[in-house]
Image 1 (cartoon, rainbow, N blue to C red):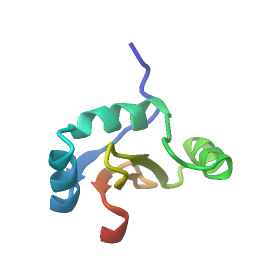
Image 2: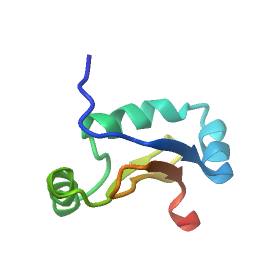
Image 3: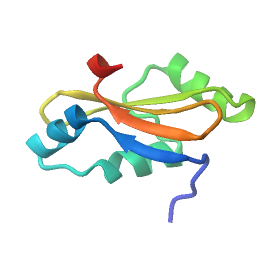
Length: 92
């Protein structure tokens, strides 16, 4: 079992990302579990390092994942860990 390294708070998803996931017949929990485990997805090394630092400093954490069809989704956990949103980048 993978260890969770952060708290999500309230988990929400936008209609756009839910449609994108449905289009490729994927479920959001696949990506949420990765985010919880510290697998920041398809980010460069600098952004991954920023997320790792944010675990210690209490800053916002952003993961990015590419779906099977190439669409990108983001998962953002707020700095205060009160909420996490799954969304498309254009919905930010």
